[in-house]
Length: 434
Ligand code: NDP
Image 1 (cartoon, helix red, strand yellow):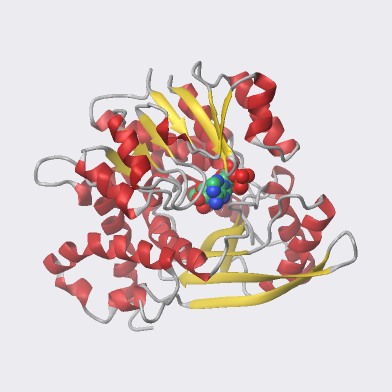
Image 2: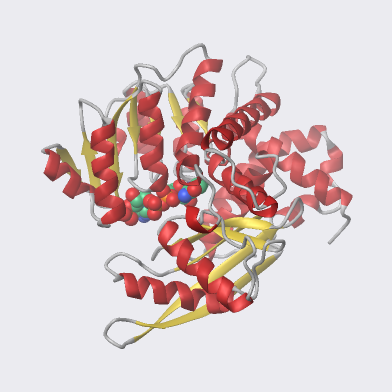
């Protein structure tokens, strides 16, 4: 805590992981040697830089840009870029740390990183967004590369922003390497990358339920968020026969007792992706109930999938979900549940998957995009989907391996933390003290 003052999110993420690892390390003392844990919780490199750009009125604007290159133990740094006013060092350090363990879980050779800026794309014109992305790359380009560090999208950074940044990178480097994933299909993107995080979260949920002798068929689901992850989690949950009752954004929640249909989802996507609109617009146009300022967790459901942002589900929300009979919680977002919420889920025997396990499908498919780019090939949707499903099932198996408790139940938190750690730790031990 002394070395990371005023970084609550980072300390929260590290504490959760170290709590899981401690009993395991005591049983396997070689992981206590060579300062391994101390090195693992210190990012290899952190870059902070000025991003100056000119808005539509000719005013100079200044934002702060970051790239946290947390670990390259098992491969080049890899992790998304977030544009949101809440971005600071603590948020990006927690995300880069989590990314390191998550990427290890995918079994693909990717280290962990995260970056972004405290830029708010909301209300900015397309021209302003493009100029900001270009200004951001005039510094970041020095630090990334196909075999060094490969960024992607995250909150506030979708295909449009990735396109602008990848374009500027190409111009500055005079190379067409795979420096970004999540690119458009017309310049090296992979089919299924937009869908991958949401689909992967649902695949993981189905694996958890199957392991407990159930399935998503007929279950009621609450999804939070309405961005990339949420949209495709809704789509896949519907495909598995679940009834999705909610979606949300930072202003409120839409509640639809009849559940989403493919047509309703297409309409939400049109509003969010084409018009950069709000969930309230969607609710109003379809005459659905809209709860301003509320999150979806008061709605009675069997499965909750938080797909918006960190710490969006607190202890009170968790208690409400439990009181309403929730059976399973799978995180599409990164660290959406607070530590108090996780404790409540565990105490009440709710199947709970932390984001680093259940949302790893996005970065896994980014890894597949890198492979396709390196081979100068494009796989079909079926090929990518089959690999995604296989990777999510593999992560579930790893969670069982390291997370099974004496009473036969499964701690997906311990399972994911230990499985990810073992892969990174073994690579670090083999490479000496660096
Ligand atoms: P988007 O920007 O597409 O969507 C983000 C959604 O979350 C929006 O609905 C947004 O609402 C809402 N949101 C953002 N910040 C807040 C906040 N402070 N309070 C309440 N709601 C908020 O991002 P993604 O869907 O890509 O990412 C969502 C989550 O999933 C993040 O935690 C991200 O790190 C994680 N993730 C994403 C991956 C990906 O492939 N995209 C991969 C793995 C994890 P509003 O419009 O009002 O801001």
